[in-house]
Length: 168
Image (cartoon, rainbow, N blue to C red; front, top):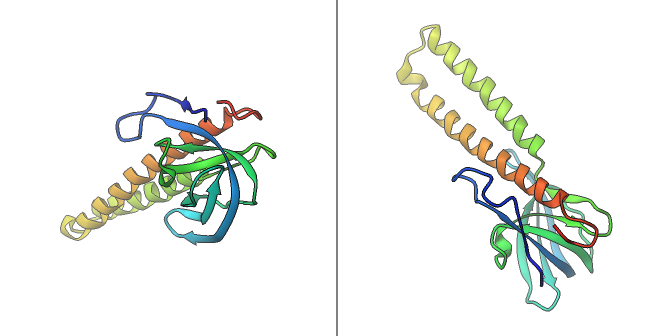
């Protein structure tokens, strides 16, 4: 099975250095569960049997359309670890399933506005002891949102580079 590396070494140390584009076939898909959470947005949990392998359980960010015998190129951080999947490109339709970088940018925008309100409150005389935890928590969430945006952007760039023959 062919593996190709996407975007080796172009990101900082808090984002994994590269992804593997792994061609596979979802021979049998089952237990599909779509859900939303307020932090990550839409996600899909499912089980599948890849060509010639044992059944796997995966969670992918984004709303996935799945079918049996689906030919995809999956973006994995670790080539044999399906729990590291970040998305895939359907080779028949050309559609990409992964968390959209735009969704992560919206989270960043909301957190920046919230931090602005907290700092404005601080400037208007609200005690730092009251705002200390909310400010630190927002900064942590902002760091996570920036990290998620960079990872989702990397996944989309990796999958967009895949051709219809499954080559990156």
